[in-house]
Image 1 (cartoon, helix red, strand yellow):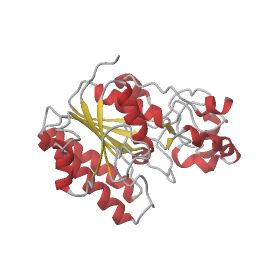
Image 2: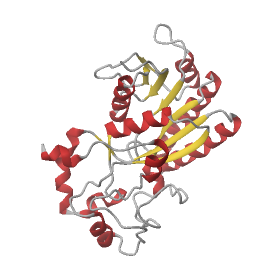
Image 3: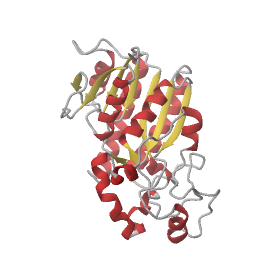
Image 4: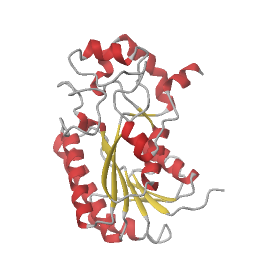
Length: 290
């Protein structure tokens, strides 16, 4: 039996990625509490309904809630309006920035020094109406937010850097997740082949929720201090066509920095592999074969 690690709060634990993260952490010996506005359909751990745009609620949620817990040792922050256009721009920005500031600040107040949160692939320049500077894209070029949603994500990364400056013992890891998918989504993938432009907005990337959860766990367990940022995607694309053919057709003038595997992701996960030991274990291709 895996020994208990420590208690971790997962904000947004009722969502698609959150459910997978909770299951992964429980399977590896973590004690987990779910903090969300949405009630989970199938509770896996203690749940508390929290509005994280209210600073007082954020502080209480991390320092103790009656019979749920008496404080947590680590934080996974996934709660957000999960993409552009779902509500108006100002509402997206106000909700996500306020909630993230409140959670980061509450974590600092509570003495939590292990924080992992959902940044976004959108900071790479999505929807790539302006082509990327090179492929595979990585964490090395400056963020290129194109929406109110991605602007908030960019500022969250800048904010995290300052929290780490204020608290040198703090570790904050931002995971730039690609488009989150579950096995039930994979039946529709073969239809993407009809038009490469359908998914060119994120260079044909995706992340299986279970692999996203693995990345979260590895980031929590990674021994470090300070801020770090990682792209988290699956090892392959959503397409049957080769990655080289896709980039040649859609972005023929973009430099390809190295030889590509047949279906290799164009959202580089090299850093996550090297530093975190992240290795995707799932692919839509395996699901379709079944």
